Length: 161
Image (cartoon, rainbow, N blue to C red; front, side, top):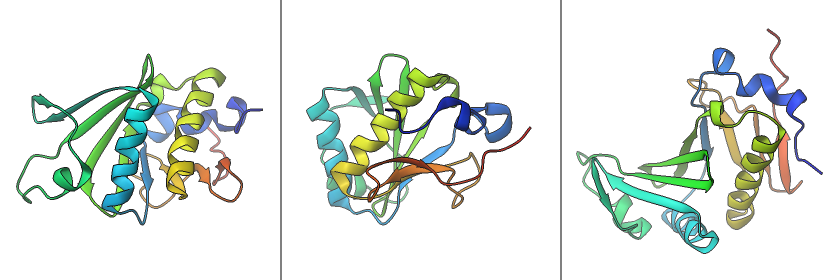
């Protein structure tokens, strides 16, 4: 059974209502948590590409990425859990695993199920919640992986247009 039903949450995936790039995050993280995520990407065989600026490089260890100088360009790890769904991890800080998705790629029940599965994988591996905030709405999650429920749940009332 699906974690969430498209008809119940489609408003949170409407780029006109919430923006096209919601922020997804794992709060209270650590360098070790970042490494767990990097290991998960490798273990699952998800297509990925790590870059610093325009330079594509092999995926380094988390402690290397997160110990870069403060004035260094922020590296990105692009991950495709399935074709047509791109997740971009941004290594802003060690204490929060931060990534973006494009809601335009997450339309319909099938893509929602892929997204929920991705959040579940990360949340289960870390044993931590994975929260999605609307673009520009940091700290007001609308849905996320709930560790105790072991599924993705709705965290806000659906928006009415």
